[in-house]
Image (cartoon, rainbow, N blue to C red; front, side):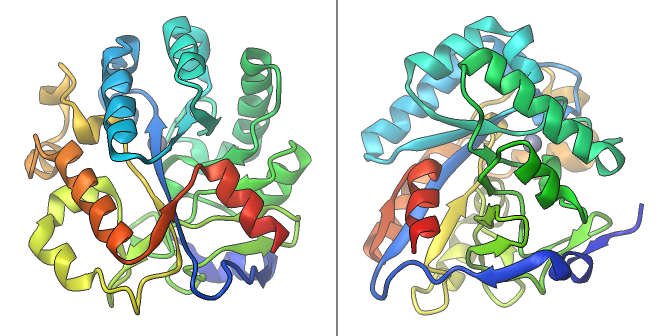
Length: 287
Ligand SMILES: [Zn+2]
């Protein structure tokens, strides 16, 4: 498949949302709860044992920030202990596709959006408010499919480029409303090249780089920070990853939790208030 271009999605963008009010800055820390390494190793060790999620939640609690989770809903059925952990931690939970099948997602996104909402509802007794696509891939028609399935916000778009997958650099860096009514809460990006401000890239590029691009006057005033359990913990199947991924994930391998804490401290210094995704949506949508 060729790259999905932001141009193909722009006709579905209704209008930017005028939020937050002058002087306010809002941020959210999110974790994609999914099979290990985005399903690249056919293992789920990091979700099978609740200790990993427990550790991340405890870390966020110690930092005084709420954590929002985007869960691959098929994992709710295959790992009942995961569902229990999400409920016990009272996390702000949303949906991250049903199967996280990156090979077929681009041609099955509408079915995935429907299946994951159905599965989410059967486990939690309510529809998920938010959706997140695997690899941040949004194709034309998806925002309408989300509205059909009662999603009120999407948090999939990196207004950046992922070679061979998408180029969304011409989409806004701050929230907007799709014509379907769904609100987009895009991922954080920073710097001239719109580098993705995620825990994966915090580790990959390191503090020195991020210090140089994290400037309050050029950062979006709404920041959605992405992470995965594999950014913080090493799964036993790590050795099965392709070499390029092993090298990338080895940079700052043990520093995921510390770097997240560092980023939160920097953003707090710039005046960002940390919210759950549900609260962020409410504030953005009513503005
Ligand atoms: Zn994912």
